[in-house]
Image (cartoon, rainbow, N blue to C red; front, side, top):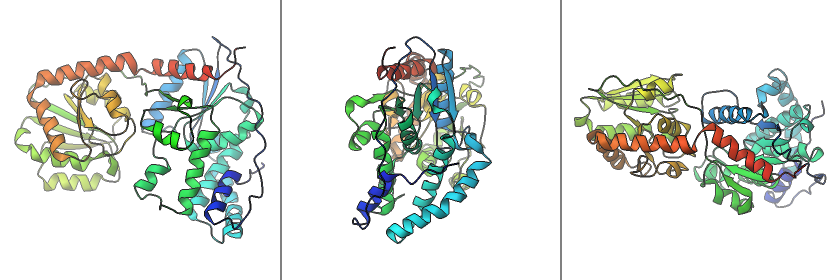
Amino acid sequence: MKVPPIYPHLLAELDRFYDGRAEVRSAEPAQGPRTRSSRAGKELRILLTTFWKYPVAGGLTSYLRALKSGFEKHGHRVDIIHPEGLSAERMPKVKRRLKGEIERVLKERYGRANAHIVSTLQSMLAYEALLGERDLGKYDVLHAQDRFTANALGRLNRAHGKPLFFTPHGFMTQKRVRHNLIPKDSDEAAFFWAIDRNAVEVSDKSIILSETFRPLLMSLGAADSKLETIHTGIEFAVRSDKTDEKRLVISCVSRLGPRKGHKILLEALNLIRSHLDRVRVCIVGDGEMRDELERLSSKLDLRSVYFWGHRDDVENILSKSDIYVLPTISDTLPISVIEAMFAGKAIVTTRVGGIPELIRHQETGLLAEPGDVKQLADCLLRLMQDRDLAKRLGRNAQQYARDHLTADKMASKIEGVYRSVMRPG
């Protein structure tokens, strides 16, 4: 197996960071002509790539499953390629083989080898090496679901000239620097900014999940006309199992991590504790903060709060709920909010990411500012005391989801973007 060299555009960015102490020693080959036959009305072969584990619990897996299902209902053939899917056995071996060579190049060139950069290059180059063994020429469309596989596909696609699309799903470098996950003005920041820019540059169009991605991708060099916003669509089995009319049920379905705002929720519930006698609050999900959150709930003596851990029956949980709450403080477009919309639940969430594009305050739900305990408590109490409002908001949210957020509609819109850059023939 031929191992690809380190990406020249990433070395060039590191060269600039290190004050031009080294020259770029290789150049990318010229881009070949694009193969743009649209095969209008005919079956498309579509490749979706992800750098992350698949399938696992989470929004990306739900998105990919819904997109694959939607495309297949339209008569297309879809492959999803993820690292373990390439070769669970060979991937670790290739990465180990690459580590020494990457470290050698970086140390000779810059005098140091940043561990984060090394591990990222190991994964990117191993992914590209194994993906390069596949017949990419059989696909009509290549669609990277992250910036890393966009870089890998961008180089491999020089031999095929296929239409290439890019969809970012989460934090890119801008937010990671803002949240101090990557040091500002560091070699890491320069390296990951270059990955972001190249993902945009190699793509014919970027298909974004919400408008919040537009200014970020334009700052990376994307033309506004090359950005298409298509909200996530899902397949959701709506159930109506609410039987206990005496007890009001509030549910929160989310990973128990710092960004999801569960501490804010517990503090908000503490403010309205006198109204919780006939209320059950079900916190569904697991994560690194579970022990801390359970301790806080116990400290606040919130006897109406129950931690249910990971569950595979979200439809059943939502069907028995009256109110859905997601107190997230940093997000893109949470699948759980869309699921609650399909379930027809009154939704309380926050003005972050793409959420306000779907949840319009007092129309399809109630919105609080992220991190504002008092606002979140007020929204919850308002719905607890006004059941008519809660039912109206739930009906409106459900109708909007049925009209705009199905997997079929998402697939139709994305197929339209694919064909918009393909030549009739």
